[in-house]
Amino acid sequence: MLRRKGEELINDIAYSFENGATCTACEAIQAVLKRLVKANESLFLSTMTELCKLAGEDPEVCEGAVAREGPIIAYALRQIEIGSKTSKLFCITFMGVCDYPEVTPYKVSFPKKESPRLRPAPSGETPIRIVQFSDIHVDRLYVPGTSTNCTTYICCRAESIPKSLEGADSLAGPNGNHHCDVPLSLETSMYRAIEDIGPSFSIFTGDIIDHAIWNTTQAQNTINIDLAYAEMSSLGHIYGTIGNHEADPVNSFPSTAVESAPQPQWIYDTLSYIWSRWIGDEAATAEKNFGAYSTKHPGTNLRIISLNTNLYYIQNYWLYQDPMEPDPSDQLSWLVRELQAAEDAGDRVYIIGHMPMGLRDTFHDYSNYFDQIVNRYEATVAAMFFGHTHSDEFELSYSSPHRHFSTAAAMSYIAPALTPNTGHPSFRLYTIDPATFAVLDSVTYIANMSAPDFQTTGPVWEKYYSAAEVYGPLVTPPLEEGDELSPAFWHNVTEAFERDQGAFWGYWERKKRGWEVGDCAGGEGACREREVCQVRAARAEDNCVVPKLGFHYEQMSEGNEKEGKVEEDVCGGSMGKKVFGALMGRKNLVEVLVGRVIEMESRV
Ligand SMILES: *[C@@H]1O[C@H](CO)[C@@H](O)[C@H](O)[C@H]1NC(C)=O
Image (tube, rainbow, N blue to C red; front, side):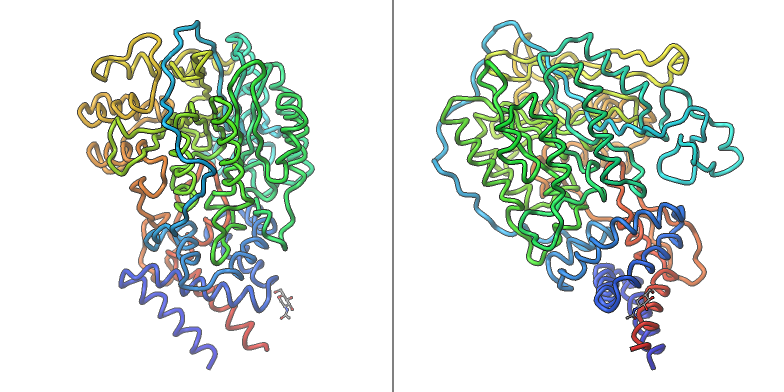
């Protein structure tokens, strides 16, 4: 009887799949997972581990990652009502199916009406220089001479097991490899290059910890955070922000309203203690309960507001409440208060955060609410700085659905990573108006890993390109020395991409940090459309991203052992995404899952 029920369930799921009702199939799988969690959480965890291994992951990775993430996934599944908006969001994030639900309307309230202030004109004073670096992902277990083509997501460690015999002759050099995180020698070489520039201050947009998400501990993360900030403190003044990899388990940042969740107070305390030397005790303690701060750069009218953007990250399982909170940890209302104070004082503001707000990685609702705030304070916000994507990119906010230079309201600078997994190690230098803090130029530096002496004499950090130089001449009239790279300017650059395929390919190559540039999915037209859409979408609901299965759907036939590899996720890399993605494509995994539930229910 029970066995028949199990077979029916499996057939139902397969039927939905074969008829293209993948969202229905996802919800059915979610319902089975929920049943398992409710009945026996430890059986849920062991089943997740089993499925992870069947999905082709390294066994050690599966065990470590499930032990860390599994209990939070179980928490999320308990909250979710099947068929609700939260349930669909879960399917989009972890299974790559269902359509994006509408944003839930929420009007952010402001203490005062918008003031008719405009962006200030350039002062003409001698510019200052600031540096931004991001996603350093330092691997203190990096060992030269180890395998670079191994069974786990990052290699170059003593325990790295070569994938094949051919992989055995590809060994890690002393200064880094594209399949690995960052050795100390590469990290410190970047700090020496930045010291040579001598910036007025630096912005570090987070992600210190390596990608070995199956093996993190609070103690080791704390040590690695301390060590990284100690290394970089030779740069002088640094404004840091909190990355999703700083957490243990990765990405886990509960809102303060989740009473049953342990607050990651240890990260907030560790960071605010380190940051206090640059932001002062008051800023460091005032809002440390969720990892954000607001501070004035000494002797200026520049306010730096550092946000914990992990509270809007789709791979943060803690956020899957049903219904979801409109303002996790009340960070957005805090941001409004800080921006109002800045406006009242005539200050200019840099908003810094780890994850840019317009990506597929950002919940549409939170991005929409954040966008309302940026629009309200567009004259006060001089620029925003993010990392997380590892790519060299930009994003524009608009005051109207009509995307035009006259409605371009704010600019997000997204700096490429130090970690070389998707390109050459990089950082950015900005030329800044010292009175208005407007960005006058954005110059990316790289250390070319293909250079013959990269592993011998060491990384050489060189100017890769200047945005003013390569994009300035594309607009009419061309950008002039001393002009701001304003939101309107950047909008006009995106129009130049639409007119001129060559100009667009230049952008694409730079976005990829000049490494394995190759083809862009969908060919010229589709690629350009998609990329321009993303640049114009600091509000995530506008980014043209369509959920898709992590890998090509293979017929859910029995014995389909083809290794389905879920699309690599350079910045999040959670195990849940791999397992759930695999469940969506492989009948044999669904059979194992359903089998466990039926077995358990036959026992009671
Ligand atoms: C729950 O599952 C675990 C692990 O599979 C098993 O050892 C335990 O007996 C189960 N508990 C109940 C109450 O069924």
